[in-house]
Image 1 (cartoon, rainbow, N blue to C red):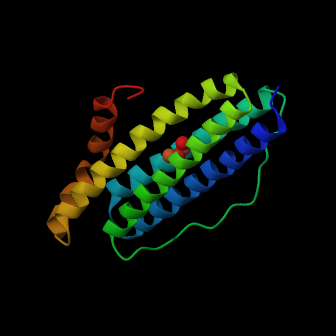
Image 2 (cartoon, helix red, strand yellow):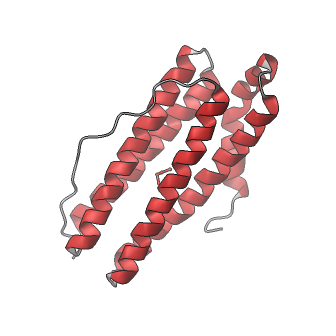
Image 3 (cartoon, rainbow, N blue to C red):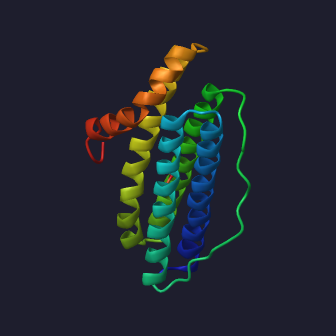
Length: 173
Ligand code: OFO
């Protein structure tokens, strides 16, 4: 059974994951309109993943005797000055999500809720991976700068970058 404190902290995270999904959906649309299909597909996939993160939390709250709260969401940024700016925002957002997960883990310790703590370890690992992917992409985008040819090649290769980072990051590291 969840304490009210843990339940409301989990519900806050449900909202953050839902907002993350919207953040990446808006980036996917922007990239698609700009004609960069690879980047757009990457963002659509990220958006789907965030929805999965949200659903996983919803199921957990309900299974543990709580009531998952589906709330209104803040609107995401829908346009960017450059791809560089968009990927900077992606990394910033993932860092924000990691901090939020850390606070949530801290609350479970305070509440002596070790089952929820254990459940959240998956999110801790996931965030390490997502931050690493975002940093790798941003490094590459920073190298490309304003070079259109470079961006074109990057658009073709972005899916691979994601997969390689995931494979090269041992679970829990
Ligand atoms: Fe990348 O945010 Fe979910 O966990």
